[in-house]
Image (cartoon, rainbow, N blue to C red):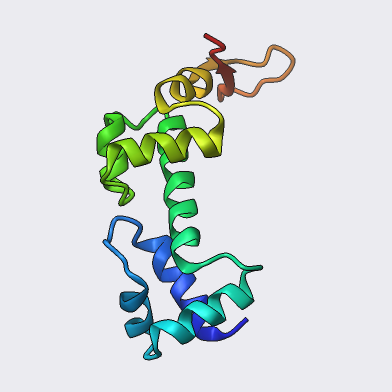
Length: 134
């Protein structure tokens, strides 16, 4: 993979909340937007830079919803990952994960409870993850 494409993929993954355009991406690696778009698609099985970015944003939003330590509202999570249009965020999230965000949150919410093992002298609790199927 071209090092410039690798660099852009890392930048996008690290700075999801930034309002990116293909022109912004191209400026980061000092090439034209047309060339970046073409090289990116070639290196990523036809996936465009913007499609890659949106996919990463949705994945990160899903991770944040799954994190029991994340207390942000759904709209705040969308803004945090750069998905500022709530209706677009909802539609794309449902397409990717098969359910809207509130339902997704209920299905994957993790409840962590300590449990000690009785068969050893290990004094550290083990974590057990339980999935709420409501």
